[in-house]
Length: 400
Image (cartoon, rainbow, N blue to C red; front, top):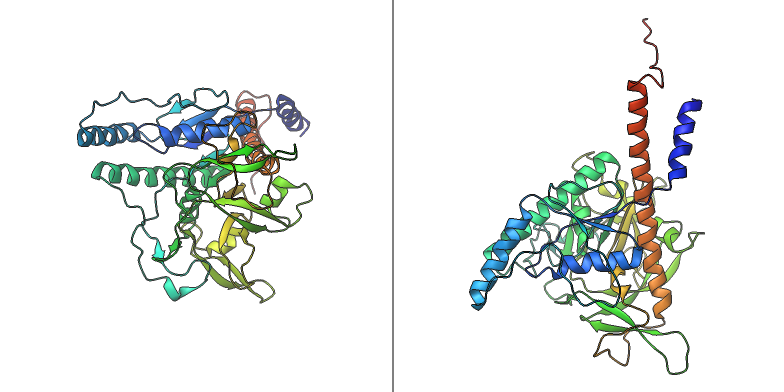
């Protein structure tokens, strides 16, 4: 027992700082992937890893080849990392092409890839009045190559989430990435033919607008079309605790570029009170999805019996935090501003530094859960090695 405690103390003393593993999302010019790694590196101060499946590189080349032929332009050589103009220093991410995440946090990014099972309905309205009506994809793949690539991304991310669940690896999911996580737990998404899409062709980038009177900088949009709205964060949720140590309930402003949301349902809690939860049945445990994943944020104006889901998290086990907005959009430099910055901001009652600090807190808190996961794995390896070499004696086998 004393030796086991010594191992734990040694691991704590090592203060592991792991890389953030980001599921690869392909793009013909690397823009989407580049965005993920550069913004997450800037906000977290950590190195990142491109986690790709063995097929994704070839499929991405197919997409680029198809595009080049359609435009009559030369095909550019494939690159995992591009040098985009960003107002901060970042490093070149590590690349894994074996479809397996490294130890540390697994991050599932956004991007315009709908769930094939998405249904039509009224966003924010729970239950089965729309469960059987298949939705037409709002942003279907434009070409055959893009379609094959999108299907591979769906399969790859599902494998990563399934492996993370099996191994107890923490997961953070952003915007469309949250849909793919909830799908692995038996959930689904809902959209409406006449529901206003918030989608933007460019990844959103939010930067500070200096105030004339020297007060806190407000938020402006460097590129992308970004709407904003207030959300209510649930008290004592993991999300609340990433932003405040006391886990107090709070209303915050978030950006919005999505066209779908996680499908909700009604259920009875242990006190027979009707609650709103996430619809579905987990394919692994066969339990209701609402028993495994908890809504941690919804639109502030929602009535008590409705939930326009803006975030969810795991109820137990390894930490899972999924948000419908883009915290990484706040990576814009607080000093340098891109040309063409608008002089006014559409964000209400929100200053840049406050919102950016919340984004940093969310990402760093989840990155630290990745550190803890890596420490547990390392401790397990050392324990096995010390048992195998006799440093820790095996438990005696007793017969009845």
